Image (cartoon, rainbow, N blue to C red; front, top):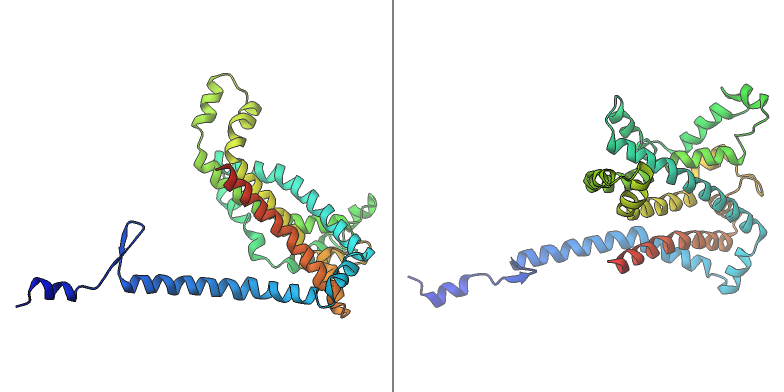
Amino acid sequence: MTTASEHSTQVKPVTQHRGRISSPIDIWRRRLLIFIVITYTAVLILAPLVGLISGAFAEGLGGIISAVSDPAVFSAFSLTLYIAFIIIVIHALFGTTLAWVLVRYRFPGRRLLNAFIDLPFAVSPVVVGYMLLLLFGRNGMLAPVLDLFQIKVAFAVPGMILATLFVTLPFMAREVMPVLEAFGIEQEQAAATLGANGWQTFWMVTFPALRWGFIYGVILTFARALGEFGAVLVVGGGIQGRTETATLFIFRALDGRQYVGAYSAALLLGLLSLILVVGTEFLRRREK
């Protein structure tokens, strides 16, 4: 027969973690999961980033400055930012409207439309560029109409904008829709009973509630537009000085063994997206 003191020595020690009792097995399991996550992140994100920085600084800071001062780099980044700005404006308006309609209204085909929003996640950007060529290319289905109005889409900036619009379609809607669903309609109805019209209700009641979803949608859309490669390569052709974006410049520089220029441009491109994402998160936490 065991005594109380002997019984107490047989009980496994436990640790309290945030109000929950954890056994040694739970602690080691948690540590193992944290280690796996950190390793996973390091392999997929930190290791390529270290390699990118190392390649960019292969010839020192002077090499980076010389590389990014190249007129071809300036032209490529200017076109990239120009396209990204147009994409943001269009999706900020129509992407928010799309999210609003899908959340607030019920109509035939709504579920199908909701499913189609995620299509860019499943379709290769190269396929998107090829389909645009089939539509707007020299022998495309819409070529006679384009020739009639002297509009050039394929191997021109309009085609690149269309391709980027398609691949960035989901981000705005998918960020705004959950916020709208959580917000509900009670406050909007209260504003309407107080005499506010639809526009006043949106700007004074709805938009303040969904602003962070809107901001995150804009940031993700912008970052995706900056990094688009496959679709704009196929439909734009990567013509230097005309349809060459930053990603296409990086591809051409690597192909021409201009490694410092390619790494420097890629590092600059990555920093733009990183600054936007980190800056947005900082502002959000500061507001809280």
